Length: 278
Picture 1 (cartoon, rainbow, N blue to C red):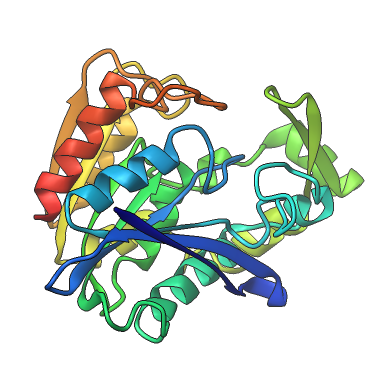
Picture 2: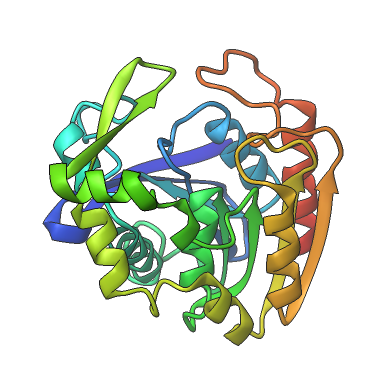
């Protein structure tokens, strides 16, 4: 039977990070997998609970969490009710949050009797993949995998007239097609990246990490082009890459997901990641 615990820790700006961990009891300590969600995502989006269950059934302790400024709250973990927090999110804050989660795994009393804290793997989807690549150099991380990951952050900012307008107004909005919300991005997002660009350089980070690295990407990814996976593979010291033919950015998943089975493409991604970590 899958066991689940829910907890919260302090993240960036002392905001709460909601998390859950799930596993199946075993006589041996379980290796840990930490999962980082992507842009406009959250830990319970779509199929992520089914993904977590599959990792637990394969003998891992799987942890997923909400970034502190992703727009959700402890009371509303699947809705972007805090647009102010969303607008004040940035890459530095997400990197801080992920590092805090990794540190938490070794000191959480709930995990002490079941977790093998010497064997921790990272998985990041989309933007969460980029954040995972920045954190993968931590001594606690054994290996890591990215699913439809971005290869850089700089190119994702507006430029030219759009950037000038953003600086003048202090905010620009993006549509969340699922909810119809116009979500804000305050100019601090850009300013923070410029200030910390060296620390947030995915290329540099990836080249410096001598750990096993699996790159999985859909051949028909509509949000992050497959060329970004190729760049990551070029930079990776011990990287391997696989394209899921015909797969989308979310590997067939959507929110909400009401089926009890994973979509075929995402199931393939999970199976390959499990095999890689084992």
